[in-house]
Image 1: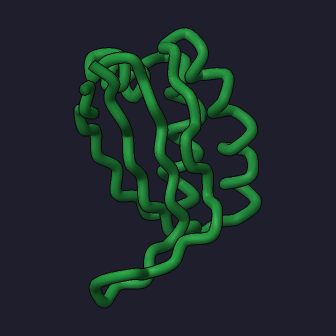
Image 2: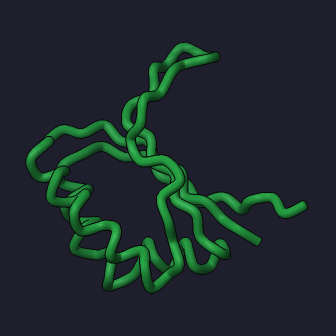
Image 3: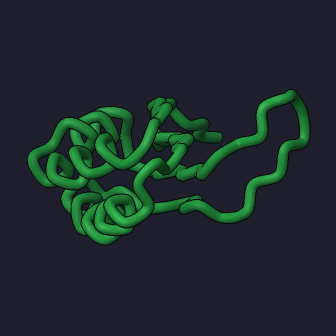
Length: 97
């Protein structure tokens, strides 16, 4: 069953975050991950909190999503992101009809 990592990011250091963005795509490859949403325009439809940068990643399984997040491949990029932003990140199983 597919799984998704949904991320809301408030960038606090744009220069360092640009370096993070360069490293991340290659780290997804061994885990068959791919970007579904990568910081495009976001519009609030309900609620009272305007979203920051939104990223959605898709993986074949929840196990692969969590393995990517904790992997050696992602570790250097993760450290950059953590130093350059405030992040909320969740993993969620998808739906398969």
